[in-house]
Structures are given as C-alpha cells and as structure tokens.
Image 1 (cartoon, rainbow, N blue to C red):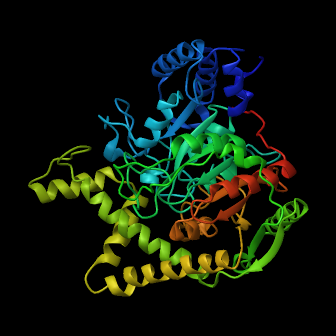
Image 2 (cartoon, rainbow, N blue to C red; image 1 turned 45 degrees about the horizontal axis):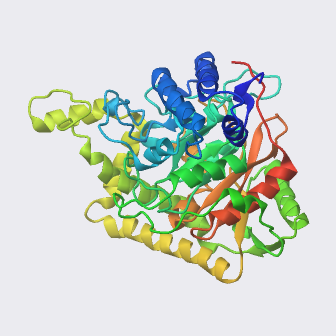
Image 3 (cartoon, helix red, strand yellow; image 1 turned 135 degrees about the vertical axis):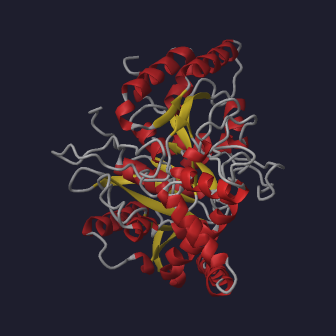
Length: 490
C-alpha cells in the first residue's frame, strides 16, 4: 500500500480486518502526516505515544478475530471534548492547562469501538466563530488554495481543525460540534462530508458547553459512508445527559443503498437570498437535478420565518453562552489572575482568559438576559425559534422527506478578510442556523468547485431522528458530484 493516508475510513477498516496492514502501520502513517502538516495548525495537541498504544491494542484484538467496528481507525478529536488524562482547552487561554479526569461519552464510544486517537484538533475559542480565527492557538489554515494563488484561506469554523485534518489526509475521520453550522459549514468549505445529527442523538456529556440547547456532536469524513460509520459509533442514549434521546441507533451504513425513488425533496424559496453568487444558485439547481434523476420529486416549499433565524440565533446562543461561561471564574479550575479581592480576581481572570469574540458574545448574552430586556429580546427570540421549528414541521407533514439548500453563501475566504466585521462573519451561518434552532439533522455533502477551484457543498435537512434518509440522499449527490481533494502544498 503506497499511501495509507489516502484511504477512506471504510477502505482502511476492511483492509485492517483482512490484515493487509496493521493498525500500528496505519497509525504511524497518519502521525507522520500530521507532523508534516503543522503549517495547517490543525492539531493543538498531538498524542503519538497514546495513538501507538491504542493501535497496538487494536492489532491484538484483530489478531484474535475480535475488535470493534472502528478497530485501528485513526481519528482526531475537536478540543471541545473532554479526554481523560489528555489536555482539553476549548482552544482558550482560560483552560490552556486543563487536563480532565473523565472522558466525554462520544469519545468513550469511539474508543470502545476500537478507534485510535491521534490528538486534539483546533477550533474557534469555545466554539464561537465561523472561520477558526478566534482560537488561542492561532488560526487553522485550509489545505485548499485558490487557483494560481498562495493566499491562506480559512477552513470554516468552529470545527476548522477537524475539517482541515480530514481534508488534508491527517486522519481518517474526526469529531466536531455544531451549534449553528460548525460541522456543516467547515465541511463544505474543505470539500468533505459533515453531519449534524438530531439534537439528542449524540450525548453532550463531557463536551465543553457553548449553547446547551443548540450544541450537538457529529462526525467529519471524506465520504458519506465514512460519516455513517462514525455516527453509528458516536450516537446512543446516555443517562449522564438529560437531553439524550432514548431511541435506537439504526444501521446507518445500510441506509446508503436505500432507494430515494418517490421521496419528496423540498426547495425553500426563502433560501434564495439577495446577492447569492450565481455559482451557488447553479449548484443548488444541479443538486435538485441529481436527486430528480435518482427518482425523487423536487417541490418548492416555504419556510417563512427563516428571515428571522440568524437574528434569533445570535440572541439565544450568546444568552446560553453567558450562563455557561459564568463557571470560569478562576476559583475552581482553569486560569486564575490574582486581584485585590475576589471581585477584582474574577474581572482580571475573565478579561485575561477570554478572547475578543468570546467576550463580545458574553456581553450580548448578559445584556439580552438582563432585567428590562429579557422579554424584548430573549423571550421573543425563543418564540421565533418555535415558529421556525413549526415551519419545518409543516413541510414534513405535507410529505416532504428532506429539504435541499446550499450549505454556505460562498466558498472559503482569506484569513483576516472578514474578521474585522462580526456581522459579515455571522452571515456565513445564514443557511445552517435554522437546523440547530429546530433541533433537526443536517448533512453537508461536497457538490462541486467554484471558478477559483474551491469546494462548495449542498445541505440536506431531515426529519427528527431520520439521519438514514440524509445518508441515502447524500450518497446520490456524492455519486453524481464525485469526490474532491486539495493539491498538497504543505
């Protein structure tokens, strides 16, 4: 095997079972790839010794004809997941020395199934960002470049390290979190597959909280099949998470061969926004044509409250962040900056520990929850959220199986291009936040390249706990569009 890092996860899994190569060999290849790609800044912590130990255990299990469904598969973990004995920082100065004594449920499920941890992946600080430029450890650089240019591009955010690592072949898959598009948006900008499952499908236990009613863990992979394999291991009920759904986890991989004939696919007219690039519009039409050719019916639908979604999201999410991040006070764990008294210590610690974007969102969230403004902002945003959810329910009641939209309003932009304008940055989430507000599953699948040779994705939104339909439809788009990979320059 000339290049083990070029395999898909499913290919590597099958070849490991046939003993074509060992898990240790596969892991060593990915450890070397990560070391050679440090210019991307995808990893904030590499764990080669731990990876070797886990790979050796996987080899021992496979030699006995045992081993879980992910035995020997090297993965990366977004630095929002607590990993026992391995530094977990949320990419913030506030937690840059924190080492958990417990494991998140999602990562514990992956290790239970035999996966190998290569290290912790970069993300926007406390998952607050759309470009992975707010990390305390510096921005992630996309492995993609525009034709004829060496300008450094963003990989999307907040899970930019996860997306960049998978796209660049540094790991066979990765886990991320999605609060307003933080899996789907970077997946689209780096030409890979990313799925945000239904709220409650994957446990939030051990995940550093941003906005608790919106956060959801999900996988990144280079193919739809690989994403299905990963989600099957990540998902499941967890009594440690009161919002975890006690529903069976289907065989997602089997859903890939399911026919989409007769499915009704909705095209929401409200997603045709002013100023949308022609390339996005053309790709959207092409996606509909691909699904129609596979036997699906394409219908126009209306989601009338979409126009309020972004504004409502940027009230609800900061409000929950303000509450969740109040625990970082310099008393129990994390950064502590001394002061004259306890109030001064609080203020100095939080001023030094949080970056600009995190401070901005805490201030917004505290404001909308304050006396006199709670009803005008937070309560009204929650009412809008209910209406957004009802829009989707009406579509599904009318027989729509899934909804097709663009994932992002444009391809990747340059590092620093939008960071000075928070509003322009927030607009990158315009097609994705509705899914989180309604608690629905959404998948982004690579669908083409723009004029500058950069990847673009299409998003499919499904019924609650019907990720199977998204995988079957995603497989149709993937088969029609093909797969995309960046030319190596790092």
